[in-house]
Length: 208
Ligand code: Z5A
Image (cartoon, rainbow, N blue to C red; front, side):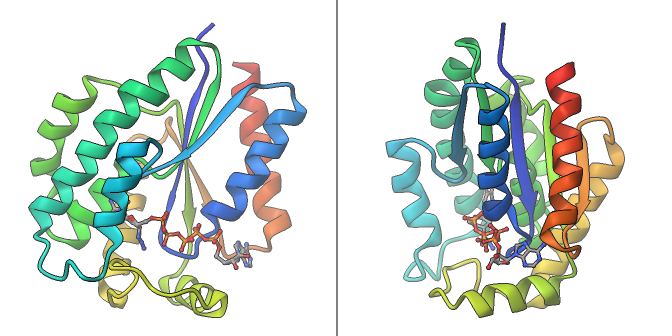
C-alpha cells in the first residue's frame, strides 16, 4: 500500500522542526515506517541547492532565480526520494514543500500565485501532499523565538516584518481554499496543546 505524504509549513520560528521530531516519534510508536526530509533539500543535489538559496552572499539573487531553484531541488526530491519511499509503503514527512513557494516566492517576493501554478503542474503533474500542517503564529512571536535561539541568520531570515506577514497570510489563504488538505494549528499555544492537535490529526490519517 502507498504511504502517506505529510508536509509541515509556517513562518519562521513557528515550531516546524520541533514538531517534526514529535511526529517522527509518534508515527514510529504506531509502527509506521517513515522518511523525514526537508525543502529546499532532502537529496544530495537538493542540499547543494539549499546552500545556494540560504547563502547571504547571493544578495542579488532574483525572485525568479529563487523560484526556479526551489523547483529544481523539488523535482529531484520528488523523483528520487519522495515517490520511491511512498511506493515502498513508507510515510514521508517533509519540513516544507510547495506551499512554501506560494507563500515566500508567490506572496512575499511578489511573483504571484499565477506564475507558480504552471511550474508546479509541470514539475509535480498533480502530485501533492495528503496532509499539510500549517503552524500559524503572529510574526512577532516567531521572530522572538528565533532571536532567542540565537543562530546566525540566513538569506531569508534577514527579511523584515512585512515579508513574513505576507507569508503568513498566504498560508492562511491557501488553507482556506482547500480546507480538506490542511490542518491549521495555533502555534502560539503551549507545545503540549499543539501536539494534542497534531496527534488527533495523525490518528485520523492512520485510520484512513
Ligand atoms: N523557502 C522558500 O522560500 N520557498 C520554498 O519553496 C521553500 C522554502 C521550500 C528555509 O526553511 C527557508 O527556505 C525558509 C523559507 C524558504 N526561510 N525562512 N524563514 P527552513 O524551514 O529550514 O527555515 P525556517 O522556517 O527559518 O525554520 P525555523 O526558523 O527553524 O522555524 P521552525 O522550524 O518552524 O521553528 P523551531 O526551530 O521548531 O522553533 C523555534 C523555537 O521556538 C525553538 O526554540 C522552539 O523550542 C520554540 N517553540 C516551538 N514551538 C513552541 C511553542 N508552541 N511554544 C513555545 N516555544 C516554541
